[in-house]
Length: 224
Image (cartoon, rainbow, N blue to C red):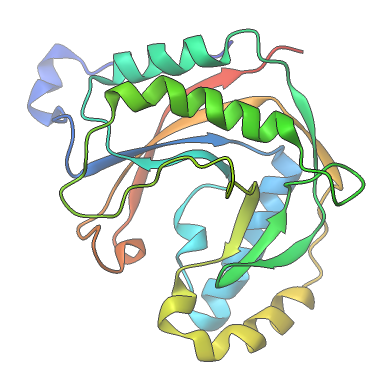
């Protein structure tokens, strides 16, 4: 298990962070390096060509628990997730390629190799982590809640997302552009890396992706 926690020296306590606002926390499944490179290649091209930044504002990831308002000490968040992922085995993730999801585009990693059967290892892991962090959650004063719902959970790697709420007129052109990019990706990867990120934005109620900043907090490795 990797424990990449951040220790703030006593001399630098004046730079310490307060819990809660304006911070949110996300627990993600990190893909393998080759898939991460494919995601950043696509999002980088969309930024270079169209100025779209929302999907690329995050590190490449499949959300397990997203944008949660957890005003607890980070040590408590880490401890809760550590308990939740203990003895959870790594699992194979299948990438079905670029698909439309919601208003945007994703790499669809929700299913098994048959392309139809949901990969329950994904949703089960998300449910365990949601159960672990929910007692630490408090209603946020601004954005809508991002609660886990097994009925609507769909594992994915975002390529094009919230920018489409602002420029829906460019969706078809952007989709054609993405499908024409010579970006290769592995058809499968081992889902064994879970990460905790802290995010912040100047305006969670509006176009938060224009001011989003994030910091890696902790990594867990699932058992092999």
